[in-house]
Length: 192
Image 1 (cartoon, rainbow, N blue to C red):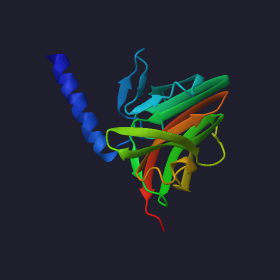
Image 2: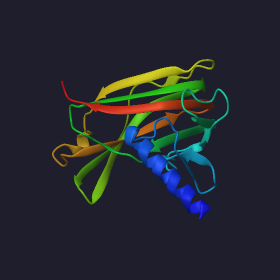
Image 3: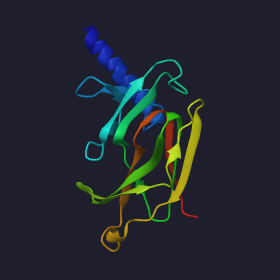
Image 4: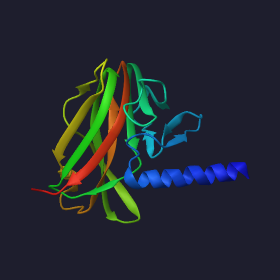
């Protein structure tokens, strides 16, 4: 009975928290992976891309900017980590994708997004992964905000073939890095 009540409470808290933060960008709601490593709910390491890299939530002092958790990412030499959200966002050609995240540590990272065609409601089609500019260097001592704004342009192979699109945000960490992340946010703004 105690486990059932705990499950109901945690599920309710996650749903309430998720209403304000659909991406869990503050990394406050946790879900353990198959090995028991605590990861942010709605986020996963993209195993097809990741090499010698790992991510986990941490509550250690100084490891989060706000709330109670931060996301610790670590990569080795010749390694990388592609960490993505499960939550997709509809996006139309010409609209702007605005993403921001706070980072602290050593190494380089960039914000990216995966583009899917969503014309068929039963099946999304992977099109490509797009970057948002040059890699950023994390600050070793202080939390540093990184914000990007890019115009959404479907890849050339989608021209005339698809009309509906969605994106999934990605945090990409380059080799030899140990970076803490917190307070990720994404919004789509209308074409101007």
